[in-house]
Length: 193
Length: 193
DNA sequence: CAAATTGTCGACCGGAATATTCGAAAATTT
DNA sequence: AAATTTTCGAATATTCCGGTCGACAATTTG
Image (cartoon, rainbow over all chains, first blue to last red; front, side):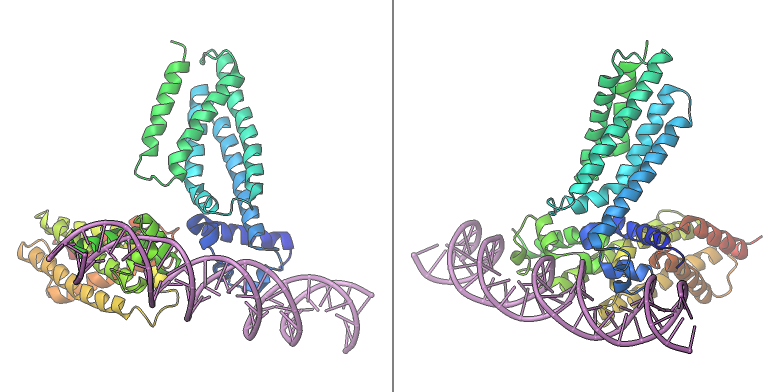
């Protein structure tokens, strides 16, 4: 291997797929090793413990999500489209990530405080992005928002409401439907008539 | 509970969902019990062991599949449609079932010989269905098959080829695409010009 | 080349998780 | 109220799995 960092990334990607399928607890080091065609012990040369791998995976995925979101709003001009894109990409990502969360909320609440740190950092970033969208929409006289800060917060809260059924395994509920509902209400309450 | 059989069915359905998600090994009796809102020990009143539950689940699912397949070919008249329906239903089912198999093929090859028994019985039934379709198609002068027995065997072999990437976790490959490819080739080689 | 460093791995350990048992007791039937 | 069926908590037995260790292969250094 040329580079230690290089190999760590390989592990992260490989382990990420398994974690996302089975969650933290149900994923074994043996599986990760086998997926890498490697002895289990070798992995410990690159990572201190299983938890460290998980942490790296979450960090990595969070980064990808951030980029996807940024791109999704840069790719269109209209504020409406920006918001729509943002919300859809976000939901898609969280749907995929729900497995990670299911695993965490199981028991190990004490450990994994790093998840909370990532989460709150991400929350702040999200708020900034949403505020930007709101501000931009207001500037272009498409949105009717008095205070973009507060409106962004409201939107964020609504989006979080969508996560709940995603993580609380009530899969029957059609998320897409709800999402469209929220967007509909949102726009009709926000758009200039 | 009115009836022991009734309750066994409840267990089978509930456990089936968990097995299909996590496979045999990664599914715990605790999870099954919790899903049933029941003490773990109570389940042992109805089933001898975890393996017996799994066996019952597989049996149950195989039965459902058989019915779905029978219905799918009864629901249309045209031989082409019959074959198409059959193949699609079959693939859909196997996609769903792939988790069971992943779990089994992992290590426990010694146990679970009952799977092989089910499998070979199912194979024979499938062959019979396919032969019927072939025969019917020939009768209606839509298919150009000399020996429906051999043609059915060929079709079955092709279908099994589709399973491989399904179970061997090469999820990237688009199965639907391959399936359409196979059907295309199949019909153009089989249909009367 | 040899010494040092880096990387890989099999074998092993101990604690945790988990399947299964058991007896007691609740619930239901007789 | 006795008998039977069903449930369950606690205990047990067993397997699993994260992590360690030392040997050694591979590579680098000098």
